[in-house]
Structures are given as structure tokens and as C-alpha cells.
Image 1 (cartoon, rainbow over the protein chains, first blue to last red):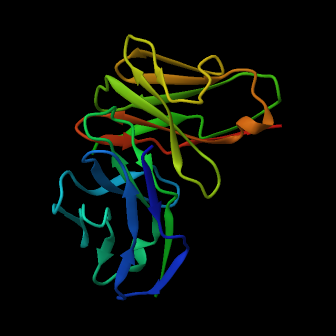
Image 2: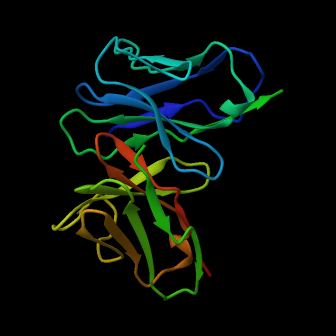
Length: 113
Length: 112
């Protein structure tokens, strides 16, 4: 079945550091890929998405590129802020399947001033 | 943006009792809602897909008689954990689909 693997946390960085959170997936066909963010005490929010190979999703300074050859969708940001501290989930939705998402375990990101 | 609420946000109950969790889309209508379950330090696992006016579709391994889902209106889906046991203690999250999937804040269930 489908699966998503993302790097274990917590990841602790200093403000203005470069961020990479790795995400790889296993799926049949051509899934859509997503990054969700969960701030403390809030529900999951869609951060960005990509629906086909080589697509780049971007939002709020975050980027991720759909790499089919490496089955990856790594999340990056050039300069993180304290307000980026949250839990980040990589997820996929099977192409042509039900709309339920398959999630990774989540990566807790802590940004220190 | 679209808002999804859940009620209650946390609940403690005795083993053998039933617990109902509500999921509401506050500013949009959702023909499809989803229920997920999350164990500590684990992924969100899709439990079932809830379609308004029809029976829910359960994922493999999820007991439909244990987790009753009702989606009676376009803004409300409920999950009832029947005869709850300590192993049902978990974090339950719903989402509702508009143009994208919007998630509720989750309900933490503790069964004693």
C-alpha cells in the first residue's frame, strides 16, 4: 500500500537558518503530494501541494518539488522564523482513488531566536 | 479560509461507554468528510470516508460496528466510538472537503 516516510524530529534550528525536511513516498501511479502544517493548538493547514512530476509547490517562503525519479517531496525554506515552529506533515493522495490522505508521522520543527 | 470545528476537544470516559464526536464545516458545505486517528508520534491514519446521505466507507481493519459514522447533513458528521475500551484512547481528527481538505483541531479521547 501507499506510504510516506519523513525525517524524525524534533528538528531544532536557529532563526534565519536554512530548512530541509525530507519526505519520500511509495505509491502506485502518480499521486498528488502535500505538505500540511499544524501550529500548536490548531488543526492541520495545507501549506503547499504538487499534483504532477516536476511541479513545485510554494507558499509562505516554503517550497517543495515533486521528484518522481527519487519519489521525494522535500520541504525547504531559505530562512526560517520563530513563527515557523510547528509540526509538518507530508502526505499523498492516490491518483484516481478516494480522497483520503496517507500521512507521514510528522516532523516537529523548533526555531530558536 | 474554510473552518472545520470538532466537539468536544477532549473527553474522558469509562470503559464500556459510548462517545460521540462531532465534526462541523462552519462556512461551507461538505459532501465528503474524513475521519482520521493519530497515535502518539505516529501518522494520521485514515479510518473512514463519510459521504452525506449514504453509508461511510471504512478502511481495511477499521471496525464499522465499533466506529459508527453518520453524515446526516452537509455540515455535520459524527463519529461514535461504541463500547469504548482503553485501546480506543487516541486523537481523532476529522476533515471536510471543499476545494481542498480542511482539518478540524482534533478530539483527544481517553478511556479509563
